[in-house]
Length: 431
Image (cartoon, rainbow, N blue to C red; front, side, top):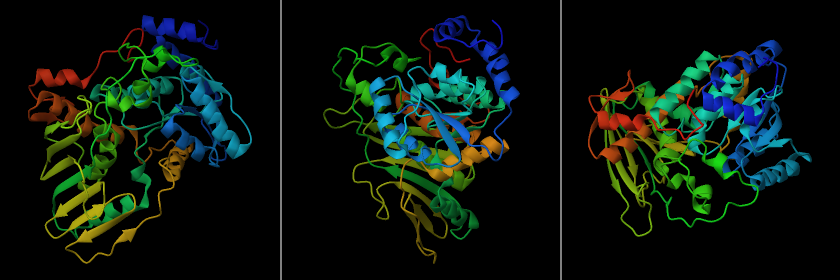
């Protein structure tokens, strides 16, 4: 195939099945980007949004008015969701956008500088990796993916193809957390010996009623590398209830946001071990995603807990992070931080306007231009996803697991290590 020839969806799928897509994309589509050159300091970054559901719509609202970028395409497997996204965009700008139902068509466009991957978790790794192969910079929602192996593959792809890849852990860009971390690291709380992250219960259930696939929805593409199952509105609308797509409900939904800040504060990203217990003790709660969870990690010189409970309020905060030092304790959420035991005044941040954080977006766009690493570079994002991923494995194995943070595997535990990756449904493969 000639390097300049566009790749159709059918050809792409055939090549993916034969295992040759990575090499061709590296030689061809990346070559297009190199020939064009990277985005200059004065250019807007041309962005395609892949995934236009709830979180995708929040990104759309922010990107539509961001002067650092120009939206050039929308993409979603569901035509109805695309229509809803077009309405949002038209209400903001008065215009509509070209749209695609298959993300591979987006990757084949020369006018796309960067992609925002706002799909369910099971698609994060593969679209991000294929985007990097195609010469696109990538903003990918958290977590990095369902498994540790996929996260490491994302890091390797970003480095191999020289792409900027930012994880959507936007608390890294929020002043309230930045200032809280300054206090934690200042020594004014004494030596930090324990830290905690907490939230309420998991409410994602897995009961379902299979139905015919709605018109305009490519259900097979929505499933992608995950096992084939009949369509149900519960899976499509509530994917966090199934480990096929999202391994842990609130554990992976909020867990990565909060444990990310814990690791940031203690200055460590390699837990030594993990143990977890949990359960669903009320009728109707899904068995794959426990309603309540208690998890404990050991880091060098510090223990960390994840607490998922009913009526879980600390310092008047229904979720958040606490750092316990030998002199005092700090509690922080997206609204403020408060300190006990030390005379440090409360800090109240700006109200959170949207889950799609402008500062996090702009950090990404700045790095697209400068080629610097973003504040939530995929390496850091991957390492922040690992504690949550291995907590889910500890729940499955029901025992304490010792972790080798350098090798990214459990120590002498073949059973637990099987959960560090997942099989892909043909013809998809992790390149």
